[in-house]
Amino acid sequence: MLLPKGGVNWKSARSRLPPWRAVLILLTRTRFLISIAVTGLVVLLWRGISSSAAEMQSFYCYGPSKSPMHMTINEMNEWNAHLQTPVNFNHHEPYDVNSTSIKFVNLNPIKSTPKAAANGERVLILTPLRDAAPYLPKYFDLLSILTYPHELIDLAFLVGDSTDDTLAVLSSELDRIQSQVEQKVAFRSATIIQKDFGSDIDMNVKEKHSFEAQGPRRKSIARARNFLLYSALKPDHSWVYWRDVDIVDSPEKILEDFMAHDKDILVPNIWFHRYENGHDIEGKFDYNSWIESDKGRRLADSLPKDTILAEGYKQYDTGRTYLVKLGDWRNNKDEEIELDGVGGVNILVKADVHRAGINFPSYAFENQAETEGFAKMAKRAGYQVVGLPNYIVWHIDTEEKPGNLGGRKAY
Image 1 (cartoon, helix red, strand yellow):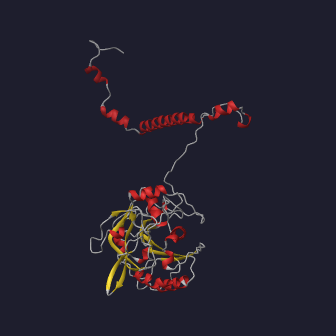
Image 2: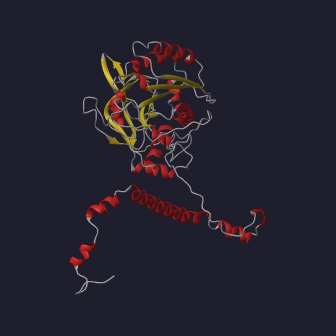
Image 3: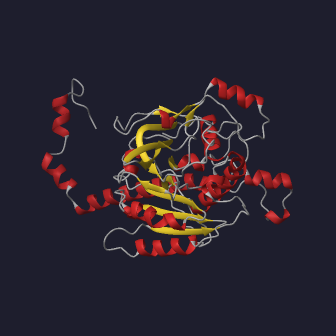
């Protein structure tokens, strides 16, 4: 083939190219399209086989080509060194426990707040009883008019060492109250516990309040309170309200009033009515709610550790400040005073205080027992103990034996 003179140039090269229509016909021929498709399919298959071969390398069996049963320890380690079992973790998958013998209790939602009724907080009312038959009708009359929702209140009683008809009267009164469901008088539940402690203290008013009876009597009452508490307290209780049977008058909103203060332990002032010559003598009843004094501390330091210091008696002059001497029902009922000892006529306690182990010592704790020991124990643990000097709950007039108040007047 001869080249044109002057070499190869664009014009001569273009003249030798096939016309564009001939190229177009070639590209659209069926044979050409099929050859292109076959070529592409071969390329794809080759790439797929190459990729699979690479992935197969991860399943390569390292180690000797023999049964694991015939491998040495070293060969087994070499064989397993390249095997990793995939593990999937699902930390949120629930675990179902179907055993009826397992009970789950969650105390985290149980709170004691100032707006207890609105929050549906449950209250446990506790009353220890001994020879209390005459007082029970009035007790339940006052209980039935409490404005705190009765469906949130549980009642529990401990009857011990009684010689009268306390158990029968209690059962009758509870049946009367719990039958009034439609009138919304009935409470959520009621529990009666019977436990005798072998107490032989005479329940005559003058004798049971005598100085000599105080140590054994307070120990016996403390045991009764603790047995009642631990038998009746349930996980869903937010508050524990201790209420004596011989109260003759108290506000209907007493629970709401007390809860509004949001204190760990709270007591009102306890007075009594006595009518002489047509006049109401407002007597001061409970000398067990007090503020400690330096004189009282020195006295306690001088006593043996197992001696129970009975407050309010001439034998022990403590110089303490008594809640009954500070208040007046005509003044602001919400005034608060920090206390070191409390009486047991009326106590509202946050349930978690009891759950934490603060109970009523039936022995000498810092030379105090029962409710005064309870306050001492609570203070030691860092809980608040508060009294309301102007909030009055009226107790029955016990007509104390002369000398029981150590020369102090009851009014």
